[in-house]
Picture 1 (tube, rainbow, N blue to C red):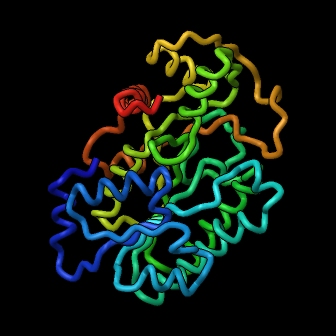
Picture 2 (tube, one colour; picture 1 turned 30 degrees about the horizontal axis):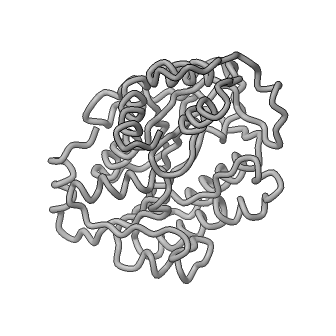
Length: 299
């Protein structure tokens, strides 16, 4: 993936005005912000409350003077989105469309983060960028409309769909498994949802590789290989030597407001051709993340 020399090339190009990261304190946004700073890139990171992307005035102020924006800001509560659809669409759809309009007016290049939830998960194969989306939740529909509105704005843009992300900032499946194992010692985890656990540190490297090339288009990114939620939980407990009982179950055993895609697998061949390094199998970044949590006494 992107290395220091490529990022230095980006920094040295004449006319670069800098990068704005929206949602800079979220899981991906925080790792992107840290990685950009480590590599000496000129960035400004914004998040609530200082920048509400649904407020056009605040959005324009945040984007002033930049030539690139990475939009990580999103309404991400999948369950609540079913009862708060207006809020989800306001952030994930309307704000993305407005961002595209402003970017078109001002010549800003946009990298927009999306999700595997734009698919229904019924395919037997990993999803390619050319596969037709069919979201089965309000969250997924809001993210798909956001993609469409951004693309229709005519701005220079790149959309990156991610899946099963985890990182230090915010809550995620990995942290929930660790927390539940310690609190109850007994876990029931679904084995019929399959995807690729993907560290936001790895996603951040991929995003910067696309940024360096100012790549346009739609891309899928996830760690290499696949696992069920159950297999992922088993891996976590084994690596941490956590004495908890783990049982298999099905998605239908947990009634929920929002439907989840059972197949979240991505075909990442398109983005892999643009990266400077092979995409790592999901096990290694997850093992590194668990070690980081342990070293920082966060578990």
